[in-house]
Length: 322
Image (cartoon, rainbow, N blue to C red; front, side, top):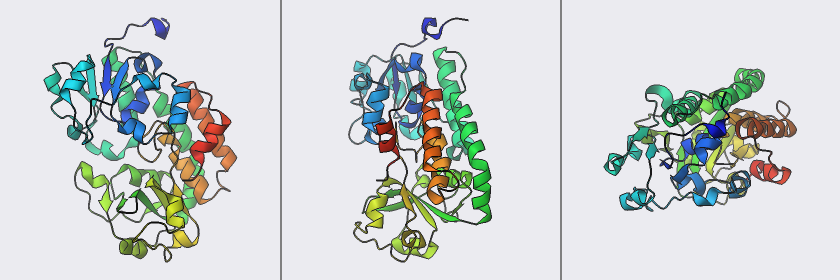
């Protein structure tokens, strides 16, 4: 069998407009070294200290071909001389065919909008097939490891009917939550929890984020809250103007948590998201999965998926509450 370093890649200059698939291609060194451009969100919501430690050459990858309004600047894109462009869903297409080079839609379609395991497995397979690389199954294996470890505790939590809120955004201005048929809804179920927002109506891609009022959250009265883009500490310290969480059970019990930030925020669909059910269970009840066990699982994930030994200080920083 050929050494992977000797396998010729079909395309030498790769662009990925979306942030989530970038985490998958980073796990394949032969493909990663050919990435020349990626969407700005790939870095905006990352722990750059960790990212630069794992990938010391990360600064060579530009985001400048996408304007501040998240529209592709075709002139800047063409200046990168790409051989192939990957995008995720119609909203990221932006008439990319104008570039006159192969474009690949990484949207698997159908229910995959709320099936993270299927989606990441599809991305890994699609990268390998289109780039002419050997088959790999790092991400499907990662999900199997995590869900097998989570299963007995998720079943215990399920029997307790724990009601959780997946707060996608809490920036002091808006409160956006994950309704049904979303990744957030799926993550809660993987941890054995019930989504308090499961009755909301979801429409289209944008339906993943649903604006709600503080009054609605008080009415739901969740047992636990997971904050993705925002600060759990700010909520617990009542720092967000126009929000009063005092009457919410999760606030009273101190069970409001920010999702970790590694290569990207675990709460989206990042290279570390397979660990999210373990994190949720750990935060809800550290007697089920201890802090030490979560660290072991995280270390193992980085080693198996990226062949990366994460330093203690960076691991602690990644898992700290924000």
